[in-house]
Image (tube, rainbow, N blue to C red; front, top):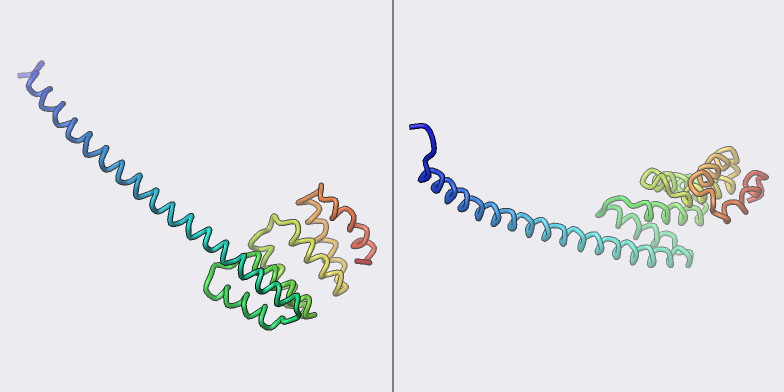
Length: 168
């Protein structure tokens, strides 16, 4: 009974053909499902970026007009309902700095750095603030980090002497 049985081969080929159609259908369905999920994810991501940009423009304008309370309230409301953002923390830090609440400003700039540790500008902004409050040792460390992350930045190079000579 062992050996070649053509009728069994034909049966297996028909069975594989039916399974192949099922596999193609399931694969196509899964690909379409993945594309739909990606579409909604990308759409949501764009929407969140747009929301952050709009909020930053509005809150930054309030801050520039010295309406710090409303500006800070807008940023904090955003943070209550959304994922933390280094941009939001940066603007909160700058707003507190303009208000001369430097301890809070340092706190928020450090939070921004925690979320975006490779952003040289955040270290530079923190160094500027630390010079303002006469914490020159910390300012020098953060300025050096900014330079390390972006050594070709001409603006940082020009400001190096100011920070090192404590005249920023």
